[in-house]
Length: 506
Figure (cartoon, one colour):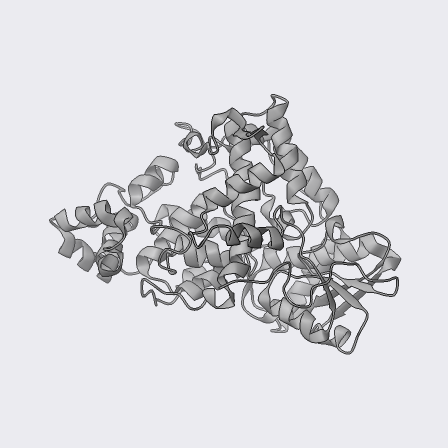
């Protein structure tokens, strides 16, 4: 199961000599990946955008980021716009590469014979994670244990050996429902980037490529809402800290129809482009608590997302192995993704929460984690969508989607396809949770308290149908004992299951 240690075989620890060229990928666009003054190589390979249908905002973000970085580097960079990487790198023996972020890219650079440097862009290095995992003595690699170890090692939100405030985790304080009667949280708008001539050129190229049948793009991409340069990313970080951090914690899980950003930072995309150093980010946020300007619960919740969960899924990608994504289907999920998902067409979706989540994704290429997990992911889990297809869909449709981000999030946590390697139980719920944490149900034709009949909420009824379908697999799971007992007491179980089997459309 083990993964590479700081990149695996072929990794070197020095930066080479003056004749070396640093090849940087789309996840390595910030100064963290530039050791200063040397020659750089950037390649815009059009084939990357034609592998599967992709959200237009994601394609735009990647191209804009690459082209902006090339412009910043000026005479230092070799910048090539080609069909494939091989047109530029085959036969070269002068390349240094900071280990890239996917199995396929790592194989490719090693096959070329490039000199591979240890990966960057995370708080915990691959070698440090390997040491931590090895010290566990075969115990399950739990997020909470990993997160605490990183806090102790870095000293972030620590008071000596004690966590700040006396608790490691303030998740219980970060589950407030939306304010009653609110349309939005009433916060200032996030900082938005200003598009330039590079963005205009990207949009023209995408239009032409799509017209020529070279790429398949879905969704909208105007205006660009996510940072593509280090300067933009730091402005977005500044804005979040100044106007949204304090409200991030309490409303971390809340959703309002007319407030697509809520108090979220929108930093996942620039982080995954390599524009921000995550250790510097969490240090800045932690300093807000130390200075008395932000509540501990909000600060700890943000630190846990960036330094805990983000690092954790990165390291699980390597630790669990390349086969993890495609070799697990514990719940026997095989249904094809519906057209409404693949085309991001919410016009015929009648469940209000799913309608707004899919339409928001169409507009922005982004949704916050409750929309991803408890609306879209929950819907897919209940209906048994193929987990590999869903994993790839999340990767392609979200601006922050990468091959390393999604397997633990989708295959493991959201769809429980790995049978409990990442999460101890399936993340499924009925309409009651959605009704508590969002305002979606108030404008919906379905009733979250009803499971049978024309007003039956497809999440509420779907929850029981999901348990009915998966009961033989989930019965040994002690955390599912109570839900399955409830299923067995359900007087109308057969009718609910039959209703959901016959339900048409979304």
